[in-house]
Structures are given as structure tokens and as C-alpha cells.
Length: 101
Image 1 (cartoon, rainbow, N blue to C red):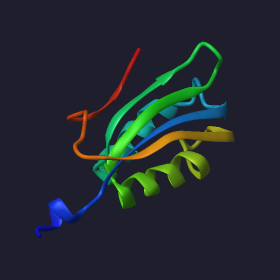
Image 2 (cartoon, helix red, strand yellow; image 1 turned 60 degrees about the horizontal axis):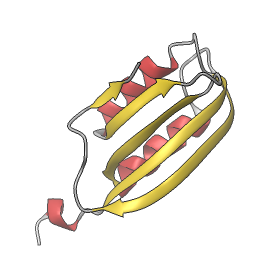
Image 3 (cartoon, rainbow, N blue to C red; image 1 turned 45 degrees about the horizontal axis):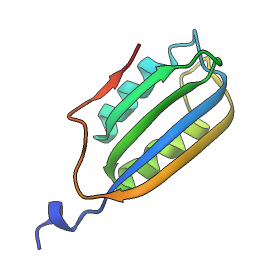
């Protein structure tokens, strides 16, 4: 079995609360996702939170989850990180990680 086939793919939805709008949170999220090699999207919500979806290998999605809940952008303040719909997927649904408007 090749490494690519053996690696389990994972998908995860997230919503981050705190000071996450107007602090380049989406830009840093996109940058971090590219570094980790995960795909998906991120956007601001009307409620003042940032939400999105991450897909990739289980390890990379877990690394992104950790970054989203503890690091964020330099001037952000993360009060709460909500993760949902975590599941194993057979293939990636996105080609890149993008910011949605």
C-alpha cells in the first residue's frame, strides 16, 4: 500500500470566536493551511466569528485544529474554538484553501 492510500483523509468544520475579524485572521489561516498542505475555506460571519472547513490528512487537520484554537493571527484573541462534523473522507472536496466572501 502506498503512503498516499494509507493516509486517512479527514474533514472538519470550525468556528472561531473572539477578536478574529479585522486582525488578518483569514489571511493567516490561509497561509497556515498552505504550509500544512490542507485544503478548504475560511470566511467572516455576520456574528463576528470566523468559520470554515479544513480537509487533509488526519495529522495535518489536527495540526490546523491546534493552530486555529491556540495561535491564530498575531493580533487576534481566540476566546472559543468550536469544531464540528469531524469525519473521515475518501477524497478531498477542494483543490486549495481559499477565503470566501
